[in-house]
Image (cartoon, rainbow, N blue to C red; front, side):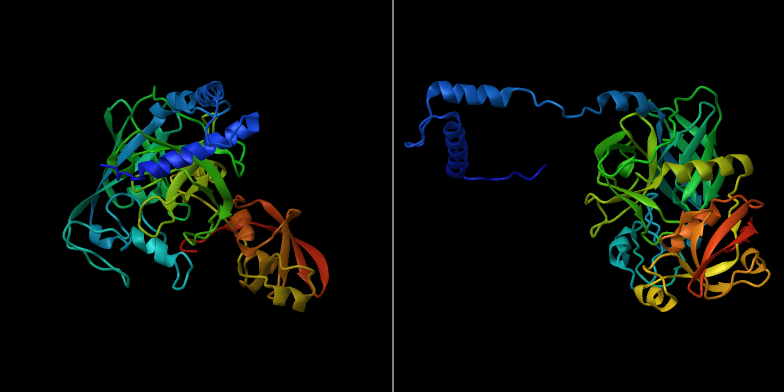
Length: 404
């Protein structure tokens, strides 16, 4: 039962009368006695009863897209090998470095299995032989391809999806990508309702709708706005999350966030919370990243990323002043790996990469994302800052080695 808010009757009456008095004053009525003329009061009540205009309704878009959203149920074996942020529901926290500002909040995601709790520290062996995870997903094609999160299906022995009409189907894991926390599933069939990924990036302030399976409550719809872009929460090397304030909880992992055109702008993957529940800060993988990763998973079952062979560090204000840059920007090359594409092209330790193919690099992660998104074998033009001058080198991108 919801908690009741008890407000003394006298206070409520005083508040109402005060509002009425102000309304009468604006209308030119007398407020000296604290009362308003009957006809003025009736006009005020009639005004308040009029429907509010220009408030968006999400009903039409939800009616169109909701059938494409599924609940994902996963049976997991060998649970002892999983990270200790596994929460039993398909919603996990990223592995943050010690001292990270979000560490204490994401630590709340470490939930408990019945009868046992796991805290901080190294991974702990768990004697359980099986487990169950719940998450969300959505069809991206009529022939049964489903997108969800990697951490929902990680170590899965069996995967099932439950459609909006209650029908449950077996699913096969086609491929996963832990670095972006995405996975692609396949269900047998060829006439499924599906949704499309948005071609345009959502803007801060845009209305969005999240649909998913929080706490096993399938088909749950929440709404909010895009709160921020390009969030780095320490979840992986290519963090570029959309922040939304639509209510997202455990089990929403892998579910879609839609714009008002019914296009998927992001895949929900994490929340920021001191309690483990929704506080209005959730993170979604942008549709542009989803499109690239899912295309690769569908074609190859894995993701191939570009590699140029440099270790980078951020350019601080002090470093910028020392090397003659007007502002701290770019990626400082801490090491150009011997025989790597960058070293072969003439990139040296101490160079600062300030642009790729003419596009500015504001920080080191910008460079990581641009290189990773470039197909091996393609050429890249790097603009370097060296000894107070700009210079340009061209190199051929290699494939990222395993384990990098």
